Image (cartoon, rainbow, N blue to C red; front, top):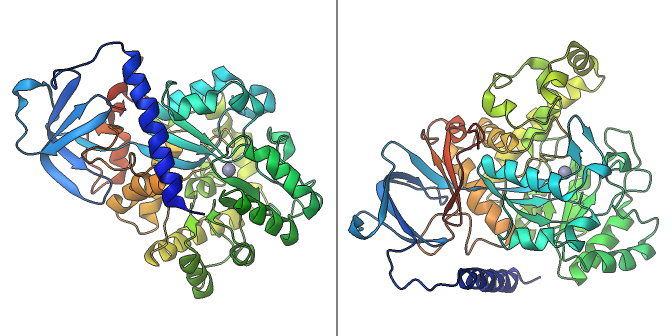
Length: 459
Ligand SMILES: [Zn+2]
């Protein structure tokens, strides 16, 4: 499909929406100074992998009007950010929203209130754009939540959606976890009509699940996923697959998959896979935090008692994960060692794939389960990417610029440059050397307006 054309039309849609929004205000601002703020003495991480020191950023309306050393401050409201760092807002391209509440997942939790409160949580953590990967329900589309959210008309993170996705009959994703909207074709012949009803919802990508979940479930046959991918392409949609095994990754590539929505975790990737991914332009979303969450609570991670982590949890989850029963269960699980190994393999594979020049975007699978907590996971993912061998600035570029490219919104989002939308995080400390400093959030700005002072503030 032609991504340039798609990006262009997206840009057009946004410009229209934004123009409409400014008209709604009812007054035209002739003075350039009105509605403009100059942030001075900024340490700017721009998302392109560069750092600009002691720079000024002029934000006018929803956009960055200028960045430079010599901007005359006399016309504008000035905010002195001496000692602080600005980085682009995070973009998480594999999350789930609305089916989780408290310590459980259930389709009944999927309400407007629950969705909006989770979008607000992402926003508090500086995550301003997300892609929900196949766990959504009719409410999101029927009531216009997705469209309003993407257009920036709702508070919280802008929510893109893969809608319902395709799973295996009697297999993954488990229907019991609020996933009963997922299409589960028995034969290739069922795919076209199911795809037709999915396409009506304008999903961002077509999600599919190719995995036996550690031998628990039957895996989707390759003849069926081939049909899904081909049908998606007929509708100019990209196919994004859940996967685990290297052999499935190769078959999926042969069958035309566009995006890997998780890491390859059973084996270290080989040159055959790297060459295939490079030649096909496959995008890789490692979701390392998911694999760490599969075992790490048994080891009492250093961040377990950080308020920044605890503030992200649904009620009851902290008590659950620190309970003796939960701890014992994890440690005695037959797949405990395998989960540790899978995480370590995922780290190795990210480094190899990144070094091969393949586009890596950030995703976490946050929100799929209460232990994969929304907002915190995205900051943990940054840390885990550095543990895999990326530099802090490289990890930030993955989570901003690259993720915007994955969504086709990089003309306006993902980097902080003149003309781009002013989506950014103000940090009390510089993450350039220590990536954990992305957790020192002083403020979050969405489209030029301060929308949060971080998850630890009281408002
Ligand atoms: Zn997922």
